[in-house]
Image (cartoon, rainbow, N blue to C red; front, side):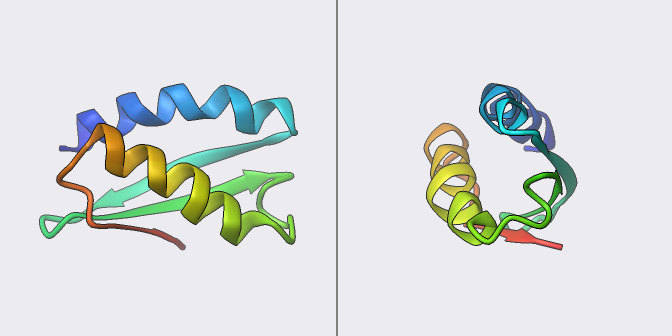
Length: 73
């Protein structure tokens, strides 16, 4: 599942990088929890939580149905 998540993140990264940020995959657990770290401009952005849930989380759940939740670490 980690490979699928990494592939999906490749499609998200250009949008984040356009705003000076990025996302780093930390861990994918056996129970479908994806742990990521927002970096660059995204790390300190007040909209980071919304980006995480409405953007990254939504896309990952669509592309990798095994993903149950996306959390920032």
